[in-house]
Amino acid sequence: AQSVTQPDIHITVSEGASLELRCNYSYGATPYLFWYVQSPGQGLQLLLKYFSGDTLVQGIKGFEAEFKRSQSSFNLRKPSVHWSDAAEYFCAVGQFLFSGGYNKLIFGAGTRLAVHP
Amino acid sequence: DSGVTQTPKHLITATGQRVTLRCSPRSGDLSVYWYQQSLDQGLQFLIQYYNGEERAKGNILERFSAQQFPDLHSELNLSSLELGDSALYFCASSVRANTEAFFGQGTRLTVV
Image (cartoon, rainbow over all chains, first blue to last red; front, side, top):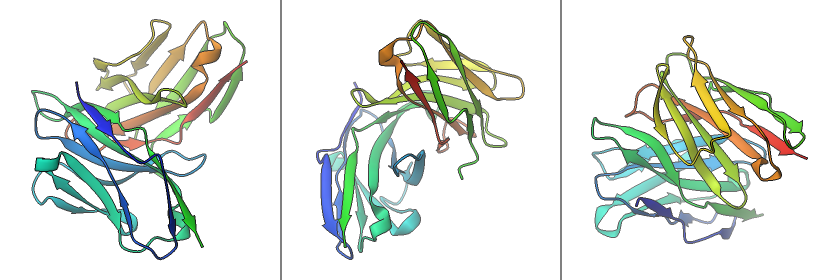
């Protein structure tokens, strides 16, 4: 069965420090991969996606992620964290349809990011 | 603002009752998804509709049902509510199956 693992439940970084959030997936075919962010009391905002092509993808708010097939990973990175980045981050994989695309997202448990001033 | 609108934002109701959650997808999006977010289960897929037709079902309880109308808005009906149904219910939409999904702000349901 497809699954997504986010090994870190909580991460705390200092403002201005670099950030890497880990995501590992279990999926047989080429995955559709996503990172979403959820601020307190808010919905899920799409940060970036990987469907195919260049394995390093750029997203909004200065985030990037790298797809590594050999490691079944799709880690999220940001070179310098801002206090406003404090939120919960979810990695997700789209369950593939033989007709193309995906019909649902399988989410990891999330990583809660705290940012110290 | 993702362009996906969910109403109401908050709902408090008693056990045994029935509620309807409404979702208006982004303009042009044909696919609508419903997800449930709870502390113990995390984010779980419930059901997907595409252009009015049910396309996929997840761990949706028999007490729950959904539909997508000709104008593409969708409703999620929850009946015989139990305390454990308290959760945040998200709607998402996408243009097609191979494009990214955008989420609404969610409806927080509290069953007392």
